[in-house]
Structures are given as structure tokens and as C-alpha cells.
Image (cartoon, rainbow, N blue to C red; front, side):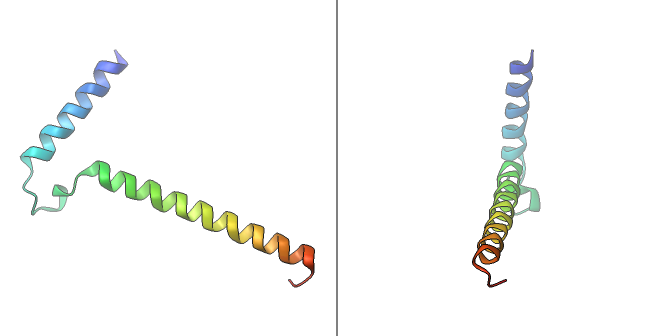
Length: 64
């Protein structure tokens, strides 16, 4: 059941993408926006992790 549901979702997404005029806001398809959000989240997580590591290293060395 789940697999067919996913396929149905994907199909309806494709239909919506074809129906919508590319000039409108929703013309840039939603999955792209979703991927951009994921990329932003990953970037933020990586940045936070890098900052934490830098602070930890500075504390170990004694600069901070």
C-alpha cells in the first residue's frame, strides 16, 4: 500500500508541475525547494559543528 501511495504522490506532483505555468511562483517545483531547505539545514549543521570544533581546539590550545 505504501509503495503505491508514494507512486501516486509522485505522479500527482508531476501532473501539478506540468499544469502550472513556469512563470508563477509554484512553477519552480516543490521538491527543489525541499532540497534547498535540506541543503540549508545541512550547511547550518556543518557550520555549527565546525564552530564547535574550532572553539574546542582553541580551548585546548589556550587561546580562547
